[in-house]
View 1 (tube, one colour):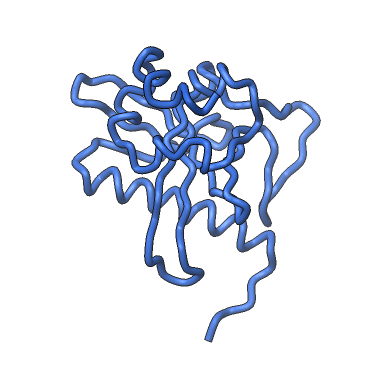
View 2: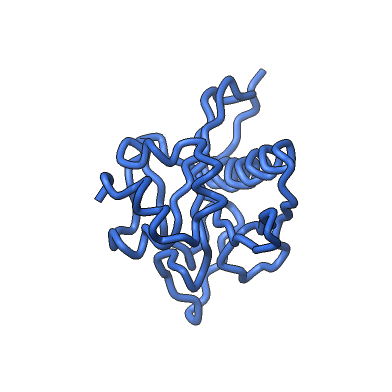
Length: 163
């Protein structure tokens, strides 16, 4: 039996589940990764590369239409709280290093999970608030792109055709 859940609670739970999916995938690949337990942080987790550099990751759930949103500063789901002093923003190199769109197939229990790595260097370059996963296919499960997300030349060599 599938439990009935309100759309707001489901969105909040799915976002948390997708953070857990990414964290598990990072740890299983040998990365030193951790969630960020700071309520007003602009990123959800950090991962340490072999060279000791930290990468700030913002996790986003890929929408049912196949889109990854790059916006932050607003709160969705059941636990949303509106404040006049918090402004919406588009992820950029000041707020995070990479946005990871998580796409899971199947409602209860996954048959497939994909990760779309979209560096904020690229987000600044395209100047959009979201992108279709079909336009960033080369970022799908591209762990090398994650590791090089701060290298503009590398990022552009992978994603330039998306512009």
